[in-house]
Amino acid sequence: MLMPAAAPSTPTAWVHGEPDEPSPELLARIASDLRPLRPAPGLGRLGQRIQASVAASQGFVTVRRESYCFAAPGAGMARQLLRASDAVRVELVQLGAGAELPWEGRPQELLLLDGGVSDAAGRAWAAHDHLLRGAAGPALHAGPAGARLYLRSLLDAGKLPADELAWWAGEDGRHAGDWWRLSPGVDVKCLRGRGDVLSMLVRLQPGAVLADHGHRLEEDCLMLSGEIFLGDILLRADDYHLAPVGARHVDGYSEPGGLLFVHGALPE
Image 1: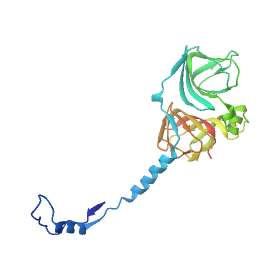
Image 2: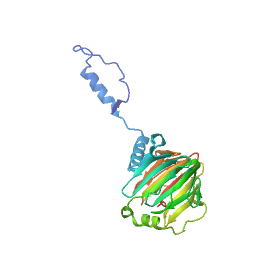
Image 3: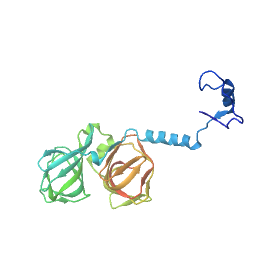
């Protein structure tokens, strides 16, 4: 783009002829006074930043809580599908008071979000308790207040990476125990782990920064409370997020703090 460096020092007359047609002398004077318009220095860096953000977000799947539309396959139960692949299905399940969550004949991972459930043996689970069910076993029943669960079901073990399959087969206790510090302001509690593949709670202090990291395995994330920005993606309570293999999370920041459930490999 060109712009005049300064106005002509003296007025230039118009020639007679076509209405409002500038004279050749005026056009020559204007052309001699034009200089290239240089973009502001910051725009180049901003453009690079935008391009990097778009590239880093390729393949991410985010399901907003506002988009949930629970289906009711049975009495007292409603399901919201979050994602499905050949290997696994991830969903939210709501149970009314006393409603049954039947065993589906496949391994399942459950995290209690609200309320409580119990089985026929009298074992009970409350909010944020974690449970892995095998291919067979008793049904679960919601308590008087009902229950809300995160449910991840194994559909085809042959489609899983070897270390993810090993996680389903058993845990090694390597990261067992109470909360431990991952980085300043970021604490982790392992719910089940084998090697560096974990299901975990991640607690963010207000103002916490999450270091940039890649993903060698798929990572499922459900925001339980608070908020976090992952680059340009804002996650709020009950939002679901999937990071595919090879993706990178950058510029993770939580102003109010928060709590997340995450299943995946420890950050690279």
